[in-house]
Image 1: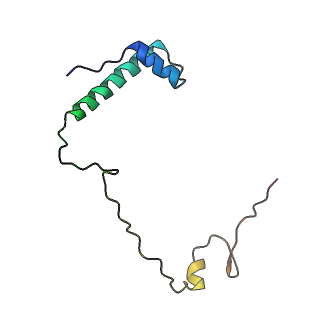
Image 2: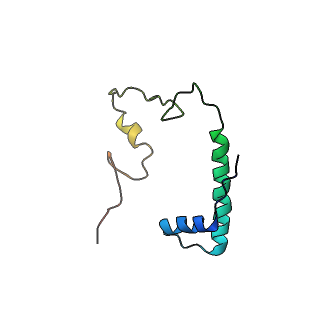
Length: 99
């Protein structure tokens, strides 16, 4: 297995494509990081996936929400019990004005 090492020229070319202004130090750091990522993918390519069906998602999602059924409304006093500001049977809010 050959190590997929990127050259500084290849990283510089990628930086140009993505319009990144990188210093020489950043190019070298990115070169090492990207080379490590490519090495990890090369390890994954060696995994035997025979008989494993391709999937779009690794987790099957199931809707866990309950059915939306109408219920009787809460009593007015319970609804307004924790209101920070109240005026009679209404919530009181600060005015929102555009300037």
